[in-house]
Every structure is written in structure tokens, then in C-alpha cells.
Image (cartoon, rainbow, N blue to C red; front, side, top):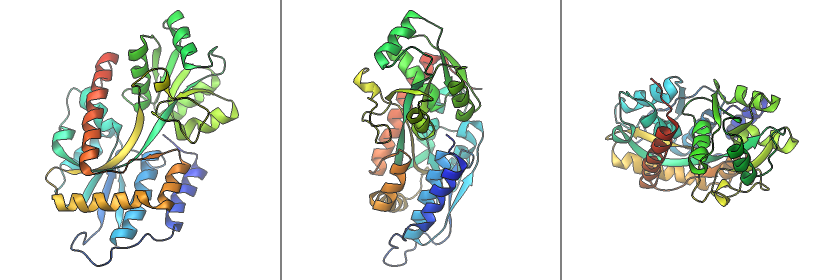
Length: 325
């Protein structure tokens, strides 16, 4: 998901302008040198912003730099493999994302097993998606969308940012639960898909909330529901999809993962510091600005999320028939 450049620079710069979060009371053996945080996405999107905000705040707390390293490509598999193959010494972490859960089934051949070869550290945030349609589509609610799609099978084009993306899988989960037939149209990223949706070249999209909220507010797109289990403060008038499809939930999320066999003491320490950041009012405010929901909790909590998401999206990938070589 891409942010307008001006907004991204404002948010990223804001991290540096925050009052310094409290440093550790005394020097500790770990960390004694800079820490790498590897992400599988290009600069400028929500993953990059999340990594840089967390890196800034954790640097303040731990007294060592967090170096954000962008390694896009291979559907985040390049970055993931770099981390799972790194020494388990607490100086290399991955910004884990839904792609790690989806890719386990989407790809027939991977050089790693993410759940087996990594250690969960902590969750950070999740972003809900929004069901949006071009205003020319004659529906104003989820029940109307379901009815229209069933009455017109194969006539609605569903845009996404690419095969296996959370935007794609959110739509496929909807299709699976409703028995509707919409034609998936993958794009090379969310921005061109959103542009064509606004232009009316495609009809519906399950887009990330930070990128489409302003278009919904301006009337360029019609919002029908959010994909989280609770309403969003960014678009408070929209119901949740779960109001009409009990059990539906789909969102983009981010957290820290480490190479397998990273010492438990290091994982515990970093989990504690990440949760301290998430409890800080300045961090809460900054993440709320971009429509994020905080994911505090233990390493085990994040591990359960990873396992649950891998199982859930595995079923959806199989239903959709999506595959990437």
C-alpha cells in the first residue's frame, strides 16, 4: 500500500520529532551494536512506514540503531529467506506480514518453512481493508452487493494489488463465504488498481484503509464495509463485513519475527520493549492517524496469529486456485 509522498514524509518525520521515549535504566549486554530490520517491500508503503516508526522508537529505548533494510521481490520471500538464514543472535529481524502466511500455500516451492524456521517476537499493528465500489455500481450495502453479484455472475471485476495479496485474498474470502462469482483482475500494485477503480475500469476492490479512505470521504468511491471485526475510527459510518458474514475478518498486519533458535531472553526483551512502545501515547496517536489497530501481546500471542493466519489463508488460496511459481 502506497501513501501520498507528502503524507508519508510527514508521518515518518514525525517519529524523529516525538519526545524521546525513556531509555533503559542502565546499559545491558544486549544490544551492543546496530540491529537490522528487514522488510520485503519497497520504501513508501505502510510496511516501510511501520518499520521506520518502530525502528526509531526502539532505538530510543534500547540505545542502538535499528537499520531498516528494504529487500523487495519474490512476494517478500527474498527478505524472509534472508532473515531465516541469518545467525540467530538477535541482530536480524523480519517485519512479518500476511504474505508470510499466504505464501506458505501460494507457492509450490519455497526454500524455507516460515513457521518452522522463524521465531515470533511480537505483533505491532493491523490495518483493516474496505470494500469499495465505483459509484456506477448499483449497490449501496453488502447485502445489495451479494445480491447483485449473484444475479450477475462473472460481470463484476474485482481489482487487487496482485495474486496472493491481502487485497486479493480478502475478496476471495468474500467470494468463498457468499458463493458469488466476481472476476479477479490483478494489478502490479495497489495504486494502479485504485486508479482504474476510480475511473470505472473495474468495479470492486477490498482495498487497504489508509489508501482509499480519502476517496470514500470525497465520494469518488462508495464504501460498503470494513473487513475488521470492529468499526474503524477512520470511516466510523461503515459497518463491518462480519455484521453480514459472521466470522469474516481480513486485514494487513505487521510484527517482528526472528531466525529460529534466537535466544529466548532476547525475544522476551524485544517483546517487552515493543509492547512498551505500543503503550506509549505518542505511538498510539501516530498509528491511529493511519487507521491502524494495535496488536500488543506476548511472543506466543503473535505466534498463534501467524499459525491461525497461515491456516486460514491456506484454505482461501486453495479455494481461489491462485498459484505463483
